[in-house]
Amino acid sequence: MPRGRLSGKNAIITGAAGGIGLQTTILFLREGASVLMTDVSEPALAKGVATAKELAPHMTGKVETMKCDVSKETDVQAMVEHLDDWGGVDVMFNNAGIMHGQDDDAISTPEKIWDLTQSINVKGVWFGCKHAVLSLRKHKKQRGSIINTASVVALVGSATPQLAYTASKGAVLAMTRELAIVHAKEDFRFNSLCPAPLNTPLLQDWLGDDQAKRHRREVHFPGGRFGEAIELAQAVVFLASDEASFVNGTDFVVDGGMTKAYVTPE
Ligand code: NAD
Image (cartoon, rainbow, N blue to C red):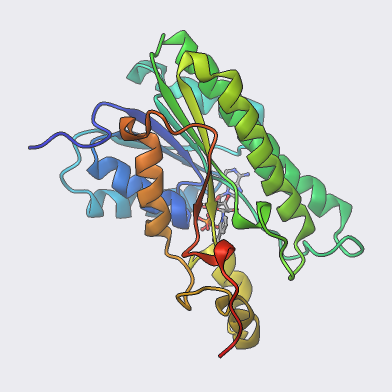
């Protein structure tokens, strides 16, 4: 069997039961990685790992699950140290994130929603980066790849307000960029992933059957459609692999051209 693009690599994926996380788990397994799927939801993880095993039947690595709330450092430390028995982490995908239904504009966003959003979306990514670096050093890795999920709203202002979320994703971009520079000499690469609105539960549950709300977003896509989680996962495979050995500190945008477009309704 040909070696996969991630053959021999140990990966951790947070938010692995969700849209992007699950698709990335499946592609990582198909490319030869071993994957620790983690999420705050244990039932969702149980379902997710069953799907992953079904869709990556020829995996050469292993897949395990572990509950982890990324906003709690003790959880994140335990998650990363779980890989000590595997030989340490090579790829860390800090992907867990929330967009809360009460997130709104400067006037209406409740402070507790602001704090909750920052604690998962920003502090959770920091904890993931911190413990990934500690593991890479402990296991004397010659290289490592850390990918942090941001969003296109970190690059362009959203007319539909979600201020806490937008601020959190801007923080992910800035933090990732600095980490990329600080750790470049160790060959620990840090890149941000910037997805456009996608067909995943995070957004689609929120849009529901509201066609007007849906159309207001779809109209911004030159191709007229939301992205699919697997289209993000393909980018994550590249960033995780040694093919991306000179890709560091990027805001890796996967958006169907949305942030480069000037589109008006037909
Ligand atoms: P999703 O809701 O399908 O998945 C997110 C997962 O994170 C869920 O399984 C959830 O249980 C988990 N999670 C939530 N809080 C957590 C916590 N405290 N600790 C650990 N896990 C937790 O969403 P998705 O679309 O797959 O989102 C993945 C990432 O992509 C998020 O960071 C999100 O902000 C980002 N993103 C999504 C979109 C989109 O339109 N879906 C667009 C841009 C960016």
